[in-house]
Length: 379
Image 1 (cartoon, rainbow, N blue to C red):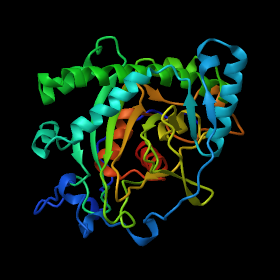
Image 2: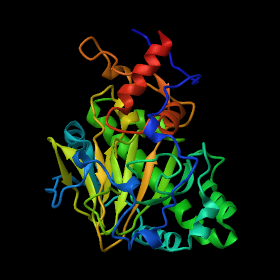
Image 3: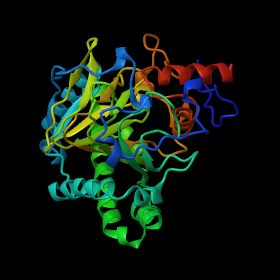
């Protein structure tokens, strides 16, 4: 049955009451203060069933060498796509090495994470994320939720591969933080361009692994409108009570993560939380809900979270690949037949983004809830 694409949102389900902003007294997450406190605020204490467990077992994820694929070796490309496919059928996580991203660029990107998050709160708040916006500085999610808050700070900004957006990252950071941030902006402009290039290569491998044309997903994402996020998880004196990032599936298409050496990423596989050991030479890649829809449910986005520790800050660089805003998220015809009918309705990325930002706190059921709502509105 053909499903029309919904292109606007007139009414949405209300968010749970606990997630309404408390206008009376909004908590400020000041890491320079809270990192030393032995009694952490109640808003950061998670329910017992969601609290982290110590010494989570390691998740064995495939380490995929991209050197041969990037050099045009068809045998290497087939081997890499096979490994990608097996990982995506299991849990959607894999590592890539020899990825073509300059080591110095990665190192500089990590150095500037330290630089930004060590600034005084008043300086960081020059980039404060405004209500209704998706980008900027956020100290936890104190302005959006009132419970189960993550123990982290973030700086998010838009990245675009469209021809008329060649300096979008640098311009945003300079306009927000001042001209002194031009070198800072240049590093993340270059980093986002490198991530966009890498993600298009991974999209080729995903297409091959699904049996569709190698260029199908690459072409779909060539003018991507993506999100770059710097994550900073300060130490917490009660790490067993809180989470750096709560359990969720990424609503985006593809996430390319670079971790420092501290560790803290955990994935829920086979009914237990397992950790992914840091590898500074590798990127952690996982698929998100939007690509799950693009694969007609063949590949699953997987529940994951981040834990914190009491001694050492943890940093990560996350690039979230998203399609151009007017692209219709719909699987290729090769993945739809009588045995595998359409699983999700057509939609555009801005619709799902708005749903997760304003109306639903992302979790393992985000795409299912979103899809059901779209189908009800369109019936």
